[in-house]
Amino acid sequence: MNARTLVLMALLVGIGAVLHAAIPGLFFGMKPDMMLAMMVLAILLFPNVKAAGLVGVATGLISAMTTTFPGGQLPNMIDKIITAFVVFALIFSVKKYSQTVAGAAVLAAVGTVISGSVFLTAALLIVGLPGGTTFSALFVTIVLPTAALNAVAMAIIYPIAASIFRRMNVTAHV
Image (cartoon, rainbow, N blue to C red; front, side, top):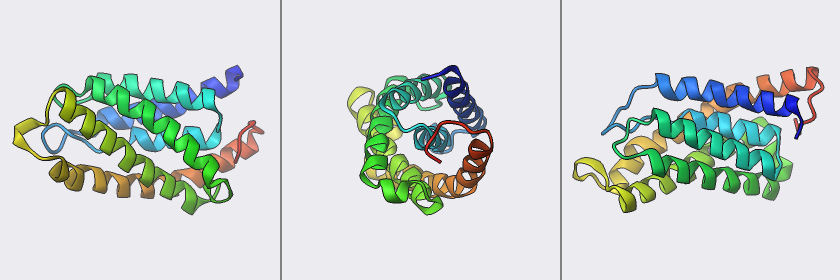
């Protein structure tokens, strides 16, 4: 992995961090995780194991630092790392479709559902869910709307990013 790739991935993670920090917590401190869209975009643009692991750890650390979920630091770390590798595997399993706008949007939605499921499960097991809420209540009120939001964001962002990367002659799969 060269310095240019690292800088571009850091830029995507930084944009995700700003979005993650700027969006307020909605329901018991849970907030839509727009950082996931940037993580999926980074993995789409740089589909290799090292990049997936690095972006998973980086987004996990930043999500942990900016979370408003009570005790959500460790669950954020766990979910981002697992999600990064699952999204990486999904990209290769649907390689033909992953480089399309629709494919990128679906991957963002699926990655968000996976991330939300892992986060809620980890939070339930490690710190418990706040206010006596249930997994399904949080899944329906936070995870599913966030998946839709991330899909729409990816449908807008992916073609722009892919075009910029093509013009820059960045070595990526765009």
